Image (cartoon, rainbow, N blue to C red):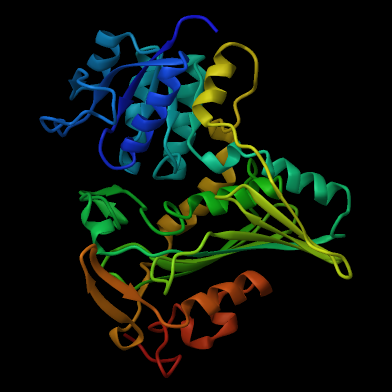
Length: 390
């Protein structure tokens, strides 16, 4: 295996904690060595950093790489910092594992591609679900004709987030911050994996879509969307819909449904689980292994494997993010169409009936407004009169 690869983690708080835990396990197996941290916020005294113990923490990324000799930098930082920090890491000779979404704008995405190409270094984008062999398993079933001609892919996501989720950082739930694009909405961040995975299943992840239709709403008092649907028409004409909310009555695993003329494939991508449904046959459920993206990056650096998620493999996703970024602001869901609960974890907002609407969207490959005119973005969601104005 050779000596452990020195790794630097930029972004210690929030999602960075999960990287710390993964790095501890990989360190114990001798694959990597966490050599330092980079964050604008100091590490609190007494923080054992998920079992790593004290580590040098720097505020400047270039300085951190120079002092630690990190061969890989993990960027678990706010969306609007991705391009500048990735450039800094590459300029200092460090390969990059970059959290999703890739960048905050399509223009920045193209700049990132250019920087990676010029550096000759590797950049892996952190869409963990694309490390699952379940993606190829779905593709294989489609190729084999298991469900006949594919009519489309529908996705549904019903999660629960309280006000604490949006209070965790100044950029959370923002479309823009201090004049910079952030695009931290439900479609582009928490459910970004659903969209990227659906595009990968359709083998449309690297091509610009033909068209993107959006309907975006928010119940929480935020700029971005927390309840939305999108329909992406791939370059080959396949419709992919994704309907999501962070205001659901209960938290359920998200699901993609590949609709075929002779059956369907349910793909619970967070569980790496597929269920093949065909008329007159017993459903068949299989679970598939997943390769962590840092493990794949290490194998790539040894010349053993191609990268699973290089930036170009997120091009279609970035076109959808750009459509979200340039779309009109999400429509506020009226107070009378919400239930508000004060909990120990913060204010929780529930939109009654949204889970049913979302699952109907995935089933019919339809936008909210096509299922219920009251959800037209031209009017406040759920208003009695679809032609009413806020």
